Length: 508
Image (cartoon, rainbow, N blue to C red; front, side, top):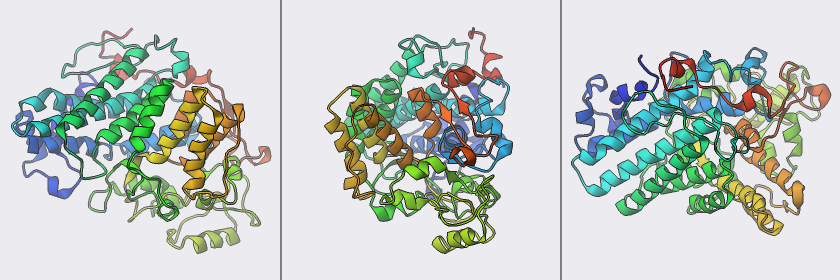
């Protein structure tokens, strides 16, 4: 491999991969040429499906790297404050000690994965205009490619760039911005340049979605609402609060909050609240290496059977008894369990199986184990959400707060998310000042638990990781019960991997 970025450009055969069997091309993918892929818009639609498929593939000959699910689990959930798993052997990942180890596969994986998507998105952008077919289809396809590229750079910026408050208004260096098919040496761009590219890509995408007049037919496809949602999240990361608020409202338009029944259905099938997700079904599964095989409470995979995923005791205790989200976790009150690990005693395990009979028969039970995410089929089949309208409410509330808008406006957004939706009909936000910000953070943690936000949120806010063992009021193993300050570990910024710096002569 001459350069890490060539991975995306050399994998054009993967562009024809699909997210449904009826999209599969009869031409063997290992012989699919660029000319064939972009001969016409029908073929090019398969190229966009290939981008979607890349988000649920296994990578780097490692069972743990499963596309976007790995980003959520290893980089969002594990190293945060609110996600407990009885894995002392994973302390290095959970305690964020790899982000300066430039030869580590864990440091390399997100760079590899997102630049692979970027390289293929660049191929679509560069070639689609030459395809035969309706102009509106070409516009829609190009818009989708811009959307994927913007999303990938946004995620990379959160990992390999400083939090915005540490960038000197964007002046610090971060990513290598590749926007064409070249694989030559390129220096790092500033964080401001990175966000300007993200915004520009999304502006182009939104304009093209509008002029094309086309609409998506599946939730795993991207469209204007997905672009709005990426815009909102990126703007929040950049502390561009007016833009974040505006696009959050646009993104959730047409996506009503899910009902309580839908909330309890397992977060594995798209519903009215899902703005964008990845496709997952029994005929397209990574088996024991899928995202659901690492988290779904009813999975038959050993990663769940032996170490079910749990909410932190401290966050659980903050959820009001009247909130349906409290019922998504196993309450150990009145039952015995091992406080060193959380392993349930016989009676608590019996209760867990009584509450959720679809738990796999040989599974362990732990205090505070989660029942939010399930698998639709074994060992771990299910769709994977990336954006929900609930997140957009939370972005809107946070953006309003940091613009110092009246507290009543922020309170109204939080009430709409929790009380009006029925998640907790008795909820009424009356907090003001810093207590209101704490309320936003708490309900963001409750609503988005397990969906890969925890560490990213803490980094963005500049808040420390603070975990306690049982003696300290938490439920973490002693090796995981620690404090990580915002200044530690290179300010939580992952360094550029050797596989890039060794071959990119323009890097300093």
